[in-house]
Length: 88
Length: 306
Image (cartoon, rainbow over all chains, first blue to last red; front, side, top):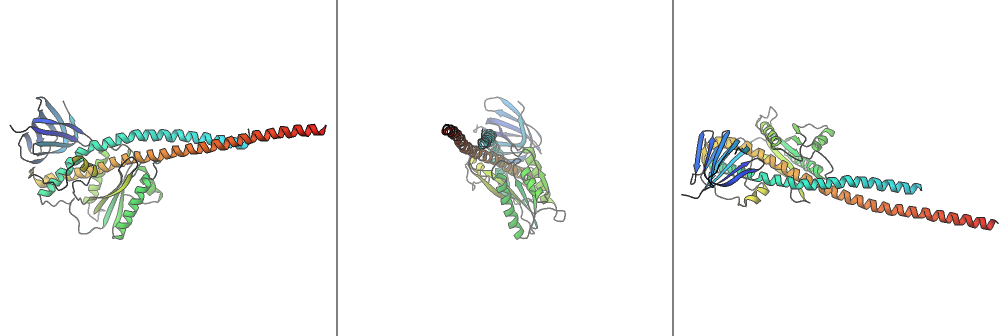
């Protein structure tokens, strides 16, 4: 398996979460998208909704993100939203 | 007690009271600089991510967006002036207003009409006193800016920019704000916000954090839904984040300027107290000397009268 994803979730005033993950599932304007390691570079607009991250340690976390976008490159996933917070 | 001595004593009292106030303000500002700096640092990942994304889209698509393309006819320019709500911060607000006046002068000499957006009570008071008009004002909370205010300002300037000339639209938008360099230095900064020039690293501390050069090669992105829509969504966010950054910088600079101003005020109060104490001691001593010589003189006169 390729190296895991490096994920960071960023809101306007702070970084909410950063770490390694095996999978990220987010809702874009065109529908849900799942990102695994080795995904091609992508820039997508997020629809309001949840972002689910399967962290490398096995834990799963859910974040709410409004009004933002998602970028993927070289296994680095950045979720940028004006308002974002961890749900759990 | 002699009249002179009383005057000195009351001056010392007054200087001591003032010093208590300035000392307290100095300490408050000093503690707030820390917080303001942390907020600047905390917002860095966001502005970095957005700048990066916008640069990437701009590099890979030839989409002509109204926010990025220079207009043929530049008739009106708008200046957004970031001052503070409160004074007692040295030259903080006045240096920004001076900078804005110079910019306005320059724009007028290029034949443009100049409009203003004002942030902070000091700018509003300055314009109110001179009976000059402004498009929109925001007051309150300049020392602790919120992203909501930045969004409001962003929406307002983008809206003004998108209006037609006949409806009072503007063709250029400039920001004038204090940039926080260090505890002792704040530099007035003039930036053209719209039309956008997207240069990664044009937000100084962002470049410092990312540590990446501006001529980095971007991977070939896939855009969802498509490049034009992505750019459409990103650019207003980018504008907001630039404004938010300016507000945070300005807040940090305000606290630093106030701390410096209040420190020198406290030092001056110290000097005044010292000088007046010496004068008061002098006055007291000469009073005593005079009384002694009066008594001695009186006793002498009585003795020689016998």
